[in-house]
Image (cartoon, rainbow, N blue to C red; front, side, top):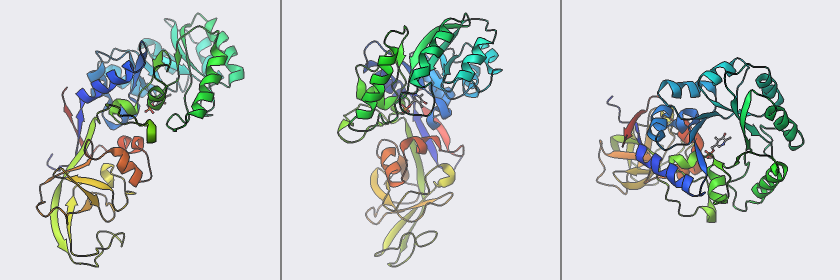
Length: 360
Ligand SMILES: *Cc1c(COP(=O)(O)O)cnc(C)c1O
């Protein structure tokens, strides 16, 4: 394909990020979270690149798990929301998947199913996020029901942080204390931490950590806790300048009057738009790198193109490479300028952007 909008995915960076996330908590195991097509990086390629070292993978639903199995992934795979209806349990058994159990309905389905072998269950407690999981007062009853069933093998005790990315960590401390106190005498491994949790709580994040964003080389932490994590961004979103023009002062660039030139301005047009997943909400001033030099977005992002200020880059010409995010431009920065979070930007890069894999 000739259109230069591409996402380069560095599989070696993913392997190093995974190793780093796991070694932060000595002796723990790590589920590599590859839901939502591995946060836009391509789930099959990512999982196969990590297959040698990953203790397991986590996905949102059975469709994602079966796609990994069909690609040859043999590692354990956890369904983070468990099954959505009881008929899925036959597939869970056939493909040896692990399931989260977050509600009584799921307990009942498992107890009345006929499993070929005992199921590995991650029993989820709602320790304060109030999304999924058993209320603390109901958790032990659910545990007892599952533990007594021959359908169930190992039970992992699980919860999820709501504010692990916040600087003071107080709410997470409360959530963790709540969870640990309630589980204190229950046998089984513990798992609470996503990327922010495992980075903030190392080295005591529990037996199983569940890194997602960190795997892709992005730190979920901000402020003083954004310690110099040696994370390497795995995705570089690139394109090229396809036109360069000089525009007089007082002219609006692109649709509407979102940006008006102050003086004579050199404008570069980049083949990258919101139909590729670049956020239309990106404000004037969002950083963009042209031929290795930082400059900025000016004017509204359109469907297939966006415009940048080249006034300070007099040598820039059509055909020059452009980085929208990656190692020169943090996707966190673009997210901030677009009133969103890196998770959303990574997961919404569309199919029109070809993925190119490095270091397979
Ligand atoms: C998505 C998800 C994760 C990974 O979160 P990151 O913030 O990307 O590290 C971990 N645990 C659960 C239950 C999730 O749904």
